[in-house]
Image 1: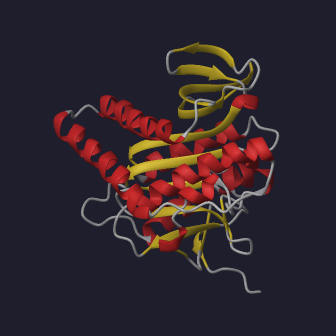
Image 2 (image 1 turned 120 degrees about the horizontal axis):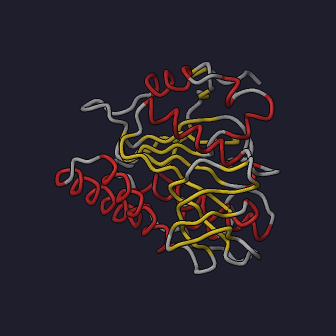
Image 3 (image 1 turned 90 degrees about the vertical axis):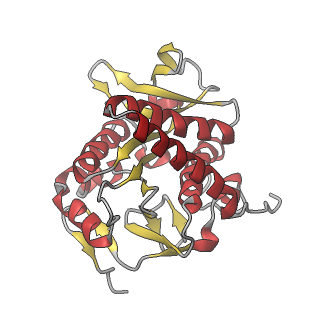
Length: 277
């Protein structure tokens, strides 16, 4: 495959600024949380549609395996339109989709607080549980901000959220695969995701590490969201490694401004030191 020139994170900064501008504009005008949340989801859907081909639809709704196995409602579902009989039901942007047609899903939170964090984890797990290979589908939590007024989100505070989560739900045995692949707090400039440090691959492995950036803008975090979704589309089509080398996903990913934390975030434990080699 030919080398693909990587887009500058400055390119994504404008999209991130636009997202945050719309978020704040609506928050000042409308106080109703439900109305805000619905529109904030649509802002992200619009951005995703700009980067995906028409083969992939951006929906909201449920993932349906059978009458006894249905996900919670997902804010965003990326659907492969090439999949035969993808839909059980659809009406506009709302759909009930079979797992075989889904490549990614995203939970959108206006304020991703500790309580909302726990709820989003359960939503992601309810969807991942329906897949034979849950690592083949991308599950992402995307928050505009953490709700910690004036302080932002810190490793210690995020660690306390991880510590409060019951380990049996997401940290033991096969349940390790039901956790999200990435958690993004856009305005807090704070992201945690699965990261395989040996392969230098985002969205791979089981360890959660924080990605840090010297860039004060939020575009690099938006590039993560886009790259993981495009990477999931590529994984579905080509069945290759999740490492983003020389792929369209790699073109979107602004790794040049990112550093990976040494510490690991573990459900039920919080922030822990990495195991010694």
